Image 1 (cartoon, rainbow over the protein chains, first blue to last red):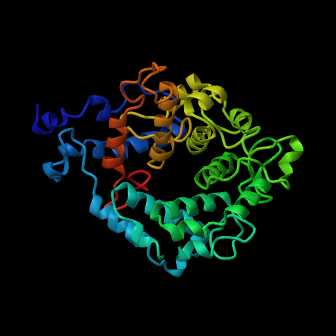
Image 2 (tube, rainbow over the protein chains, first blue to last red):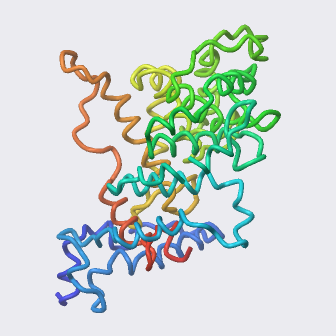
Image 3 (cartoon, rainbow over the protein chains, first blue to last red):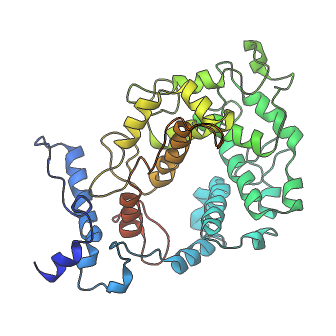
Length: 116
Length: 252
């Protein structure tokens, strides 16, 4: 067993191998499904990627939640938007809600937004 | 608060911004945002009386709700309306001027369970309105709406076919991706982690029965009925974008 294969053994096979049975009919649907599988598979097996640090993963081979990056992204989303975003004007309450809700779920104090 | 102060209309409800007509989706987002930031001033901003009258005008003769006056009627309307009614503790009685009184309805809840029930399809999932295709986000709206209507073990059991719902929900999770797809034959998409993922604890609560230690539970659920491990692998492995934020799938 190669090093990368033994690393991967911490991930159950059904989360790292393509499905055993695939319908032989080829349609637009089956092609998009195959394309989605192809882009997900390397990420699901990222534990074996020599470019990734083993510290990026927990004991189950799952990458960590990039909490700081997400918080920064959400705070940016609560700032003013450039003119190109005018099409989303009617969605402002949604954008505010999703950002606040996600910050709250990650344990951030959102009471500082009361005055906004 | 400055954001939502200008989005509220005198005739009730919140629009997308100043001068926009009120819509149940923006009202839902506004109320929950105010609840999240909290504080006396946020709570007193909401005009409950005009909200109650506005919701009365949205209630329809078939039991559901329009999303905006004269607009479409679908299960988003029903869910967002019940969130507003329960969060603001509005009177359950329909205002006297509500057109739905013509159908013999006296409360916001009359005819609602039956309307939601008609939205469940032969697949087991739930569509936006009767006759439409089963879809993850609308299924969440209905399941969550029923949980506000009454205790889940009562309302979900009464108005939905739970067995076929669980069958449909289960087939929404794909392997090896681990993520959830919104409809039959569609692709996994991170956003359904919220919509479909959110259905599971509610359905499991319906199966487990009341949270009363003196009563025997209806069904003992020892672990989740879906693979939370698979979903965690998809969200954390495939959906995290480089500089923060979550994406629908790696290429999007």
